[in-house]
Amino acid sequence: TEPHDDLDAYALELDQAHIFHSWSAQAPAHAAAVSIKSGLGTRVWDYAGNEYLDFSSQHVNVNLGHQHPALLEAIRVQSQLLATISPPTANITRGEAAKRLAAIAPEGFNRVFFTNGGSDANENAMRMARLYTGRDKILSAYRSYHGNTGSSIVATGDPRRIPNEFARGHVHFFGPYLYRSEFWATTPEQESERALQHLRRVIEAEGAQTIAAVLLEPVPGTPGIMLPPPGYLAGVRELCDEQGILLIFDEVMCGFGRTGEWFAFDAFDARPDLVTFAKGVNSGYVPIGGVIIDDPIAAHFNDRVFPGGLTYSGHPLAAATVVASLDTIASEGVLEHVRDISENHLGPALHALAERHPSIGEVRGRGVFWALELVTDRATREPVPAATMGRIRAGLVERGLLPFVSENRIHVLPPCIVTPAEIAEAMEIYDAVLTLELG
Ligand code: PLP
Image (cartoon, rainbow, N blue to C red; front, side, top):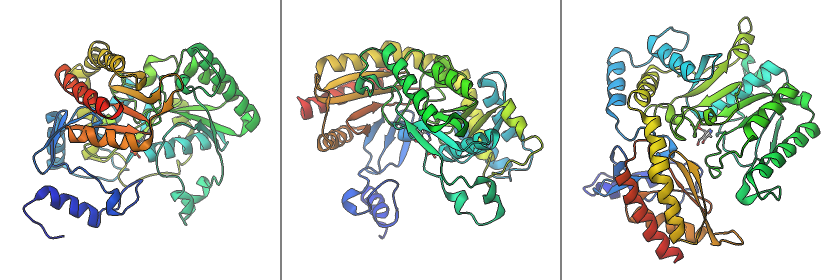
């Protein structure tokens, strides 16, 4: 792979020769089809100069869009002052980032443990819950994504391993998903009630005294953007309280404006014990994640060592972008913008699209967090097959839209700063491709 003038081809050649990809088979036939050289706002460009509307926000993290000047300036200023510093050191940038996260969290959350991303945020939240309760099982939903780590600390050889040796302890349950209900429910109220009864039965069957925490995405993202039905999150909170179980909300994908709120759970009546975050907290410009910790859990470690840590915990370049992002979301009225976009532009546009396309079985979401469920038949809800979804994905890219396609769904996930004109442009592309592939 020698450099040459066709930079688009060179980028793809380098990628195929030297990058070992996440969640992928590695042969060239499975390789990435798009190169990206640059971006601005809701748009990115490849090395050949082709322009794309980014309606995936990359990994659903670029909430403030590409190359936001406030974030770039924060990186520039911090990098010239101090590019890195070890975690035990007091540093104002890191402290300001934590202070701002505590300020947007519910009353009584005052401390933040910083990680490198969302997976290790959940890893550490589960560790805190296990150490705090002295129990080891974690209950989480079958339809969820919480990250990619899990056994590295148990594989560690030195004594830091010992308080973390939880060889077992993950149990799953079904969360609410009315469109494909596991509970034969036909209304949101029924779905909520029956999903809670199912969770109660799982807790009883597992033994409440063995369960440290329930870990939940308030609005599950990757598995399909299922808004919780009325009373569900509050009901989970109640169940946890009854049984001394902690509640961890994973806000990695749904937080920081994605649903038009600071945290997705702000729109629902439930208070967690631990909140995990990453992605939109700083639009992913520098990797960071973490756990926001309720006071009693933080206090548990006042005179007891917390057996966990990371070289880059609270990295100053990342912390600087957290400060800039949270300040920008507040000062630029981003949450208000997302609500307006959702109610007056994106929501109505997607419902209008569904009116034109019987292949859209359901439109659901809020904010800039929407899913289109593609079906071959609205009555049977038969999912559109994978081969067709592959062609839909390719068709969208060909027409200049970077999509997020998962199973039989298109997730519509522009940055929070998307404009009505960009939404109109995207709708024409979705419309054209759905017409071509599904009639
Ligand atoms: N939790 C949720 C809800 C996510 O969507 C993701 C990533 O997609 C993660 C955790 C893992 O985060 P990361 O990939 O930053 O480790």
